[in-house]
Image 1 (cartoon, rainbow, N blue to C red):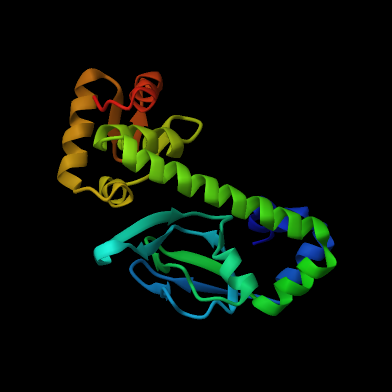
Image 2: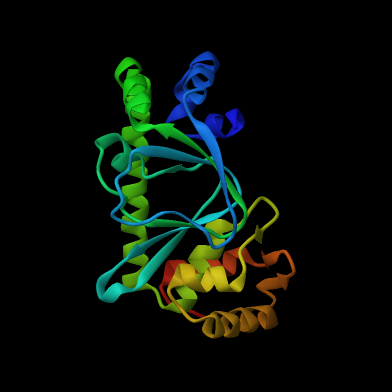
Length: 219
């Protein structure tokens, strides 16, 4: 659990002793695949950090359509709402068996008041989230499915070029049907750009996908 704290943009600025002290004020809980951690509009009295597993943050947009975002270990969830005492901006659902550590909102506020570095880290992290959201909106306006898929694969690849998402998860992230994503991936497999494996999609020609994103023209 402390290892996840160290990867947090907000909590890593604390000394190891202070991270341990803060951790002792919280507790762990586990959710199985398909279970809901909290729902959009619920009071954010607990700041959650993902210890292990994978979850999906689902925010309902115009027309009631849900726009999901994958949440992985080390992620702080709804930091702004938790600190401000506001309501949840999205619902959180476990995609796989997941374990989270919950910290009481008031305990986190006390840390921020005593640690200017932590407050600065929170501002930086929230600014990063805003920039990511702006980039995502720009991508949806400028790119077709091929461009959005290429952008997602590049962003989600690990050091071995593997994207550990199922095609269903990829389709949900792109707000597209699984069939359309499958057809596009099949086309790229034929061109030698990607490989579809049991572990996920592996990039074989990342530069080709980057060119799709740069040009704004899906292949």
